[in-house]
Image 1 (tube, each protein chain N blue to C red):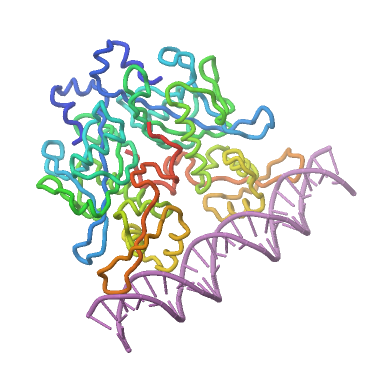
Image 2 (tube, each protein chain N blue to C red; image 1 turned 90 degrees about the vertical axis):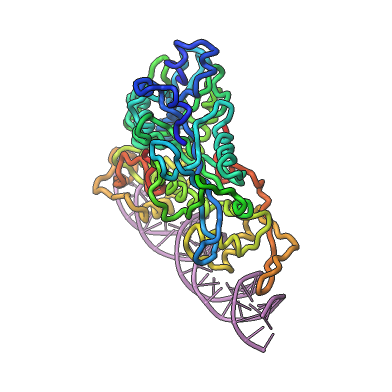
Amino acid sequence: MERQSFASAANVSERLAQPPALAISTVIFALRPSESSGRPTLWLPLVRRIREPFKGLWALPGGPLTRADSLQDAAARNLQDTTGLAPSYLEQLYAFGGLHRSPSQRVVSIVYWAMVQSAEAAMARESENVKWFRADGLDALAFDHRQIVDYALWRLRNKMTYGSIAYHLLGEKFTLAQVREVYEAVLDRTVDPANFRRQLKQTAHIEATDEYLQGGKHRPPRLYRYTGATSEYFPATNPPSPNA
Amino acid sequence: MERQSFASAANVSERLAQPPALAISTVIFALRPSESSGRPTLWLPLVRRIREPFKGLWALPGGPLTRADSLQDAAARNLQDTTGLAPSYLEQLYAFGGLHRSPSQRVVSIVYWAMVQSAEAAMARESENVKWFRADGLDALAFDHRQIVDYALWRLRNKMTYGSIAYHLLGEKFTLAQVREVYEAVLDRTVDPANFRRQLKQTAHIEATDEYLQGGKHRPPRLYRYTGATSEYFPATNPPSPNA
DNA sequence: TCAAAAGTGTTATAGATACACCCATGG
DNA sequence: CCATGGGTGTATCTATAACACTTTTGA
């Protein structure tokens, strides 16, 4: 996905004279039940490379920056094209510009990371060349994408510890236990239900509905709603506004 | 500084067909005594634009990405060229890629932010087209550089509150009161000297020397040293290593 | 009526804050 | 010896963690 329209009409010496190519890639996180335990775990979609370099390996969805879109829009479009999903959260991760990320031509990748709601993620289309993988324990990926995913995971965990971000992985209504499960899945540690509940109650933007989740085996838990704009790209813990 | 070698040999229609230009800019912070109070305050160097667009206005130092350098190296070189200084801290800030940042051609700027030690900053060369300004209360700058500076300030303050970053603005040896002054200057609030001292003593990478700062009017304070690698670009509070 | 999750209350601990106090030096 | 900043001690407040306990439901 890195470089493609660029290379087609150029020979090697022309490539070397060209300025670095500019690409957008996206790390997309969603919650899916683990095959083994059934508990929610972090997954992300990857696309199989159908040409050199790294032909056959899995890579982050992405492509060259098209003239018409802002960086943010380009990332969102990307996500739409490969998975058919709209992000409930989208933020710039980092610009990777090492000299030898791609063997033939130099590529600078501006990488975004996104979260999609679990309900939608369940309907995401897969195919021979688009598959979902567990975020931890990935094999070798194309380019430096393995390190990029690790960095995105680091950022996700970081934001999770102090910030209201977990809700973007859930549906519109959710129980407090579900939020807790997200924390436990992402941070990979257990959280005391009693204290967790109190922390959330103090937090703004969490509104109790008068509905209860039925169908469980035990006492039906109350449903809550997140009131901090659902498609908010830059939450309060973030910059004034580098939307440019 | 945005776009320059790119545009020279191209007419307008060719420009529109070109992919977005890639530029590197740097927000450089240093401590200088305020003209009024004499207390240390935040300053940054700007360069005057000598051609359109925004001719005559002040802008961040920067330029197009040269093939030979990594993004980080390009930013460091930039800093060297315009101010003659070497950064004691350098980190990627954000990639700005709005469609209309530059009137003629589309420019994607990868912006870094840096800190230089106060002793060195005092020797920084100024000229007709390179001047230092107080970081707060800037006038209108070229392009979207004003917003970029504000964002860099936000990031600096954020890192300052939890992270060992203030030392990069000071010299090799410093008193604890000097560190406190940095905090007060950057965060713009007073800090209790007693508690601040204790917090620092718990922190790693702060080593007491057996020297004392002479020449003051009162009891000579002990000098300390920062032992966390002085040119460390990615401290512990940061990503695994997106150095690519 | 029992198991298990929902939800509440209570105490212990760690860290931050406020501030009273002593120490050392130049004038 | 006094003013002032360097440096220490200590009480208080607050957020968090740990965990015992009560409530509500399905089976």
